[in-house]
Length: 100
Image 1: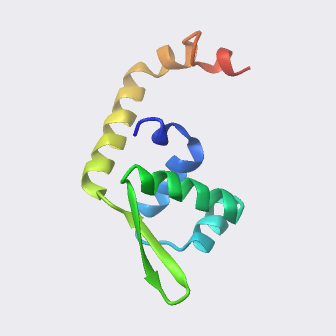
Image 2: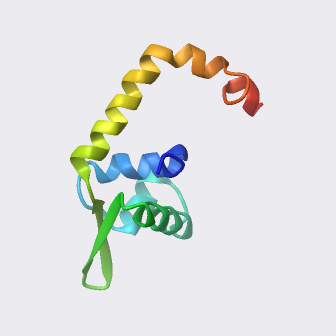
């Protein structure tokens, strides 16, 4: 599950879905990503049990499957990063220097 949350695009999708249901076309417009990319990320999030969809006409409406619990985890991660952000950024294995 945490690997699914480790991708910035998937986190952005979850942030948008926290506001309510969205179609893939809505998410592509909001995020500036290709439809195939958004669909692949949604499939990953669905397989982890984090999002669900329901048919609406020819489209699917996507939403958070377990909104309160997921939002609690994301809020806790934000609090943790606020406390340890410099340590994470400077970490030789995962920080900014490791990605350059």
